[in-house]
Image: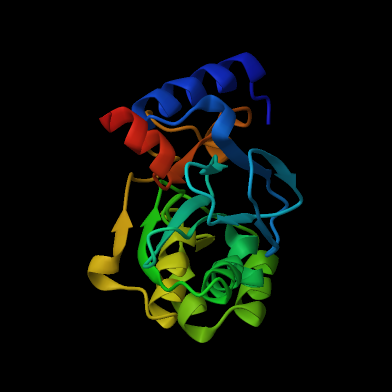
Length: 219
């Protein structure tokens, strides 16, 4: 909330430069804290979804969050990629499982998962009703990993711990998982809506090589 569109565009341009992706080749989402996955073939914004999947060469997928986990999945076929936005509601509705299922429906297994920075359990105190909802909806392994206590003793949720537990249930663990960044609330280098109330976002961007562009670059 409160994102400056000019700053967002400028920051995306910087990221695209680093990743050697054309700014006009970005697929983004307007997350709704659900489990819907959009299969995209071109750039633009998908509304009301919390995950994107593509097999289109050269198309970059973006997932962002201010305390939720931005997650990227890389398929073992060299062409299927996905991103997801997962907060505590995402754990409850299993957006990670839905995204992995979508990738498997595309006949690809997850070769690697990358989890970006997110609020940690020490900092992310929540009402007991939220704990109860997560405990009812999520698997035992996810609930056990995610439900904790904050430093001040209040009930809390560690979303990234829950996400890692769900990935492990789906057979994605060990060297197949990379965690990047620390706690968004604790780190002055990250945006945090919980900490600041009005903030920007950080996230993940993933793309596959465009064979046409690659061949041109090598010519």
